[in-house]
Image (tube, rainbow, N blue to C red):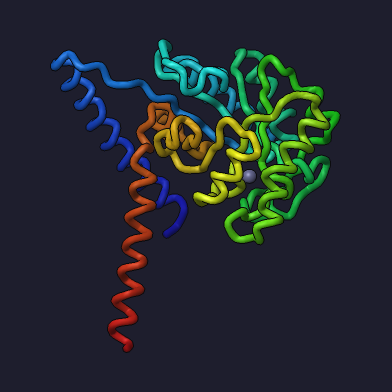
Length: 279
Ligand SMILES: [Zn+2]
């Protein structure tokens, strides 16, 4: 399905999901029941120089309709109106050059997830994103220059590997040693991990716990799981339409994980049916 049509369909479903959620809210309010607040976690990758203005507009919108929080508040009781955590994956230089100045101006905290063995490189994994240019990951000096009061650094494995697809020893190294690499470079504790490509399984979750991470992050906007350990995020871009961005901030894309499960089940079912037909 062309990407644009896919986006419009997702937008329409999210609008319906949002309206239904508002009705539910009013219903619970009428009954005197307080619904538990959840935090939306946005994940960006790149902000190119010609996208800086639209990113700045998104940050202004974020301040109007939500409350950016520091990652240390994640999982605590939220008193703020619509708490939102902003994160960036891959530690690209464009974050430092174009996104960070806008965040500093607005005092918006951010978590940046960095592949520890790709510093100062244009790694091959960026080809997967089909962006206009192969992005450069920040150097260790650039990482050290980020303001620690606003920027928290987390691990994004060592080489941005597909963790469920590689052998056990390499996967363990990617998870355990990337933490160690960053702690040596930055001389501070690294307690957050984002799965490259959002890929994980139960074993990877277990290794992440053993490696000492306190919170880990996927790429689908599911609710927090495993006792506040695993957090879902919604993919966000400076290209998002304003309405799209607002719906993302308001948690209206929360139906996406169910759609993914349904899609997988349908695929499995159609494969089984095909087998039955041809056998
Ligand atoms: Zn990544």
